[in-house]
Image 1 (tube, helix red, strand yellow):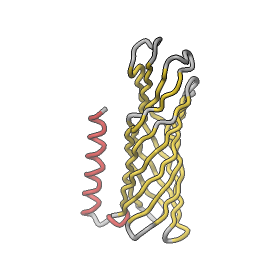
Image 2: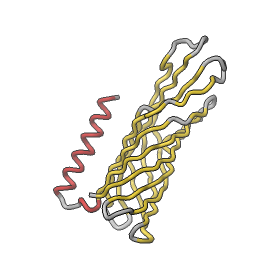
Image 3: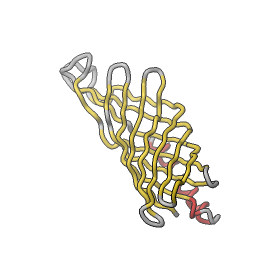
Image 4: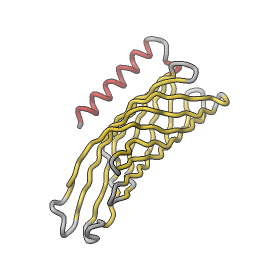
Length: 188
């Protein structure tokens, strides 16, 4: 899992370097955001958090692409459904995604955008309590799915902006990961 994160970071850094050399830098941006994730399955509903990094490039007047990396920050713990004496937690350790982005700019300082692409997301379930089979991470899984979302970006200065978006990262077989993110972007 760490090697995937390293490879994704190297890909982003390589792309930034190539874009800086090819004079597309005014169309490139890096967004760092705080995500509140809504996780649900047939038994649990939890709200872990993550740090999200998006590198993107606007390639035409209304189209672009984005690469996304998310790293889990917190585990959301609550009483177990099967046995309330146990505590069951959910954490999203990693998220990766690649998106096509469509956007419109009603004014120079305001952007409305939509994303459509693919995401891979991980999930760690933990159990602590008297009847847990084993304490700690009890189930770790990763899944990939069609992913989509929409958001707004407000320009604060020439190079800096703030953004918010709502994303559906995964929705298959009764398991869903959706997230609201607030972030800051820098254009270069």
